[in-house]
Amino acid sequence: MLDTGDPIPEDKDAVIMVEDIVKNGDGSITIHAAAAPWQHIRQIGEDVCAGEMILPSHMTVSPAAIGAMIAGGVLEIEVIRKPVVGIIPTGDEIIPPCTDPKPGDILEFNGSIFSAMVRSWGAEAVVYPIVPDKFDQIKEMVAKAADECDMVILNAGSSAGREDFSARVIRELGEVLYHGIAIKPGKPFAYGRVDGGAGAAHFMGLPGNPVSCFITFAMLVRPFLLRLQGVLDVAPKTIAARADFDWPRADKRREFLRVRLNADGHLERFANQSSGVLTSTVWGDGVVDNPPGQAIARGDSVRFIPFGGLLA
Image (cartoon, rainbow, N blue to C red):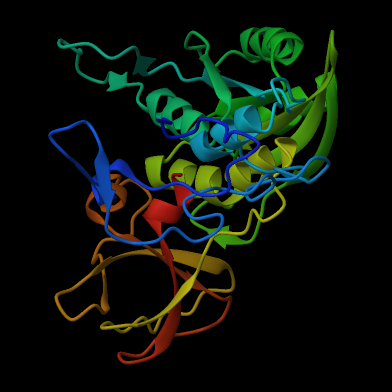
């Protein structure tokens, strides 16, 4: 008698399953069908042979891959360290989440959104204390985060406003590579490198409006963060879909319009495309990636990016 997975004795070349035999009262058994050679026996190397690749480089180590590697005798592998992303919320009016905000207070929620998104992309997040709109304090916190993290996110502080310090902070601590990008929402996005104790950290300055933050984080931070982890295909997955709306106001920037799927499987846009309507990212199903200068007429085929593909 053998259990599943047991080695076969060297002088045997077939197995009959116990379900296919009949036990007789005298202790003997009756076999109703002849056994073929190598019946119910798995050949050596059927799954993986010695020297054969189990998992290529730059692949996610899935639960199935863990099992396959252990089955093949691979107990240790080299992996890319999870990037650490430091998130710095700024603003005199921003306060930690609480149940009794005072008039004029704004609960800080972007840090919670960003940290959840970062973790969903396989990295680690560190949310730093809120920093007031004071240049020296922001600079000090950015320098601290650059020493401790691989990437620093400053939110907000990236536009042309009086108290927007992203570009200035980068210039004093490192190098500004660009400030401003032709997308809507999210134009004030800034990127640079900040010198830290352990080497240069990537720096990204995000605008303050919630939807602008969400879009720039999903479209710009996500692919960057995935590439740091060795992922090669980082472009968001797009689907050709039909627009059940008109968008005659073509912009010179690349637009990301929040939409949802209707009962016919077509796209309806949210009437209010303001950068402050965060619920459009909650109730919506994704965005239409609309090229610069292109109007949309009802029935047109558009590029649809589902939120589900951006947040996993």
